[in-house]
Image 1 (cartoon, rainbow, N blue to C red):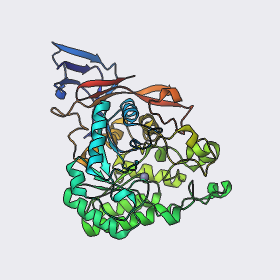
Image 2: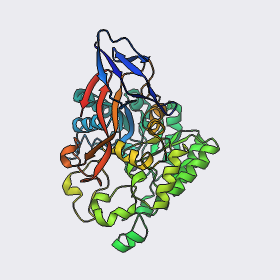
Image 3: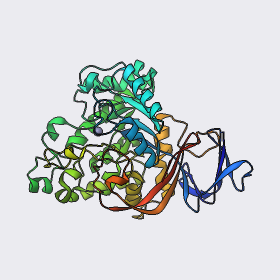
Image 4: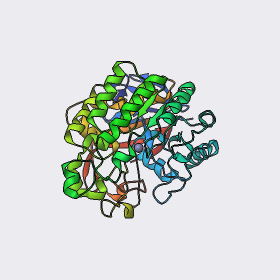
Length: 425
Ligand SMILES: [Zn+2]
C-alpha cells in the first residue's frame, strides 16, 4: 500500500491536549512514523500548509435512521456526512424500525456500513425488547455480534428495576449503558425548555428536572451495581453538578454533551421555532455556562453530536408538531470550536481530546490517538476556514440545523480511514 507523509503543519497530540509541529507517515493503513524530517522516498507528500492533522473524530451518539426511516437518512448518506464532518468512527443508536434489539439486526447494520464504504460504524443495541422498557434484551448475544453499548435512547428507562438489571448485566460484559435521562411524565407534552419562553409561546415545556431526577436515580443505581453509566446529551446545570459529585466519590459515570447545547440557548426558539426543537431542549444560559464548565473541568468526558436528521416537512411545521432533533455531524467541529475555542475558554489542542481519545477510551478502541501502530484514521482541519451552511453544503439527507444560512468557522478538509482518503473538501 502507498506511503503518505503529512508535513508542514500541526499534529494534535490529544493525550497532552497540545498541537505540536511534526510530520506523520502512513503506511499499510497504520500510523507508521511521527517525527521531524521523515524520509520521503517512495511516499506521496501532503502539504498541510500550516493546518492541523488530528485523529479522526469519534461520535458516540448518531442516529443513522436505517432501517425504517430511510426518508430521513440512510447508512450510506449518514456515514458520508460523518466523513465530511471529520468523524471516522460513529456509534449508531438503536431507535430504528425495527429497533436494533437482535443479533441479526446488529450484524445487518455492520454489513450495510461496510458496503457503504465510508466511516467505521459501531452499533448500539437496545436495552429493552422493542425499546418498550419491559423485557431486557440478550446483551451477551448482542455484544458477541458487535454491539458496543446498550441504550433505549429516544426515551428514558422508566423502570428502575430494568435499569438496575441492565447496569448489572452490562457491567459483567464490560459495556456502558448509555442513558437518555428523561422522566416521560414530567416531560409530557413539552416541545421546548420549561421557562419564560415556553410560557410566552404557550408550550407546556420540558422542565430541567425531567432530566436530572432520572439521572440522580441512575447514578445511585450505577453506584449500587458497579455498572458503567454513560449519560447521553447532558443539558442541565444540575445534571453537571450531579455527575461531578458522583465522579468525586468514585461512581463509574461518564457523560457527553452535544455541540448545540454548548452553543445555543432557548433564546433562539422564538425566531427558529421547529428548527430549534430538540430533545433534550435548548436550555437557559445558566445551564449552558455549567455545561461549558463541565467540559473544561472534565466532568463531561466527550462531545457527541446526537445527529438526528429529519425530512423538511417534519421541521417546517408548528412547534408542537415538529420533530425533535438536529442534523449535527457536519457542523459539529465548527460549532464546538465556536463555543469553546473562539470564545477563549480552551485552546484547539485542549478541545480535541473530547472528540478523539476520550470517546475511544470510553469504548476501548485503538483509534483516536496519533501514535505509531494505531489505525490511520486521520483528518485535516482548517480551524480558520469560513463556510456557509446551506442545504447543498450538507451531505446528510437531514438539512434540519439551526445554523442553516449562517456562516461558521472551521472545516474538515480531508478524512482518511485506515490509510485511505475517503473525503476531500
Ligand atoms: Zn436521547
